[in-house]
Length: 153
Image 1 (cartoon, rainbow, N blue to C red):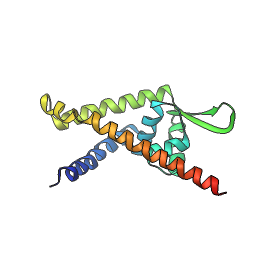
Image 2 (cartoon, one colour):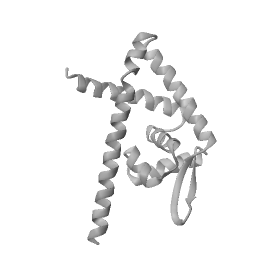
Image 3 (tube, rainbow, N blue to C red):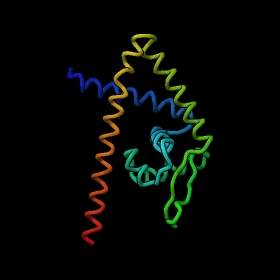
């Protein structure tokens, strides 16, 4: 089997484990992604939609659930009456940390100790950087498209 296809299949199977751990904490995978991106920095909902690969209505529904649970809060953007930024609350950071401890334990149990685990983990920073670059390209392309649409009006 092609190693890249094999990697994609492994990632899909790992996503199921991540999803189950999130569900055990009371939120879904899409909400986990939103918490991750918002934890990096306070974000506008539109930016979260782009970063989390969700539609705006899906982001709204996910954010509403996180706000209701006290894991995210909406903040006004200074100088922009309609602008809202989303920030992770103290409870949200604690929930995220607890979920990630559970994930770390679960994956370490799955893979096994020592060299085997470190061998699997060594390549992940490169994959993460590649994913970040891809996301940055997608967001830049979306911004160009928005500008193009606005310019046609």
